[in-house]
Image 1 (cartoon, rainbow, N blue to C red):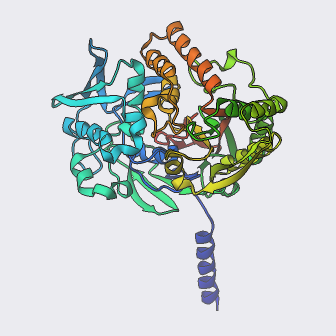
Image 2 (cartoon, rainbow, N blue to C red; image 1 turned 135 degrees about the vertical axis):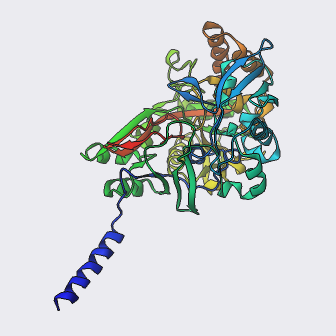
Image 3 (cartoon, one colour; image 1 turned 30 degrees about the horizontal axis):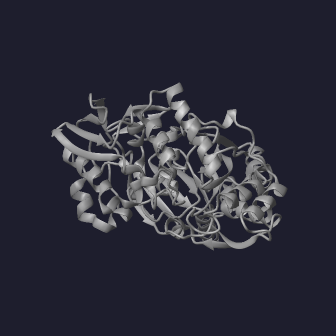
Length: 505
């Protein structure tokens, strides 16, 4: 009888342990993220969350630490006298996860892949690369389309510029995104579609090895569920804390809330070739109809700032601090609609993805526009198809944000992809073309740091606030939650967070 009860007790204990969500701290770090990982190919996505996983597997020639460009797979570099060609000396003895040594040919292949149809998703970043080649077995060169100074190096820290094994990547073909392999601190262990990606430490890493053995990214779409999982100990860190949950984490003695002013700017975008949004007065009316402080209060619970223009206050050379709040004037909005030929307003469609922040913003914008006679029906597009949908011409107005995966706070990465005419159909989803703006952006990236650059971007700010290819709404604070004993994570103002130096205290 005693033996029976002993066996029963062991079985019960076993079931309890299996049912209890426990993160094996010290050995395993589990992170709750907002999106399902559809691909781990950093040249085949535009989602910051996907980049955040891929950057632990694949690496770039340079990285950004504390706002400075530092070596990673490149040991050193120099810009040649023509101001567009950069030579990189590669670090020796770097191993891919399969044991092969990284070569100059692999590096050249990687950039050529980015410029091929295989890298079409990241064309908004790669399009500034004109040429790549090998000088010798340790030296490669990259040529920019125009003089870009430090901005070109900053662009190379973005995951689009990841280095791949030519032999392995070509063998995998279209399957690479599900079976990636690189030089990073972690290698792929397994991926469960829609649920998780499990990585394990790469012990032959060329630099300082990761302190944790296992790194797991779990997809937890609902913000409330992410908070509950953190509280239960099932995960050690979570991204995208809902404003309503911030106090729960702040008041929990075992947890810590991290708030980082973000590079992101949420906005309402238009295809400016499509009536009635091709009429500047209609766009000006919509601009004046939106109550930005009200949206910040209702959607973010104050965890963010109302937009004043096309750059958040966190971006270099932003005119935010020198500008007044954008006007909220429904009466003037109605007058502008009348002048534009819409005295009784009009009906339209407002597109949003499944993201809760997009939908919450869309709901308040819908209400604001109703007050001036614009009746917008909200249409929700599946998150995975959203970017493709709004990239096609003749689309309805849409809620979007930019800045979640820019490599640095340089305004080049913020303004040129979105508004330069050569990017129409890529990141320029507004089909906006303005020769004066193109000239300002081209001169801005080539100008000397300081007052000269500042002047070009100040003029670009004014022009975009006047032409309004999009209506800037708000910039949120990035909120993260973690267990108090998790250290070594520099949580980012973007959506790309690196856990390669994390450890438990």
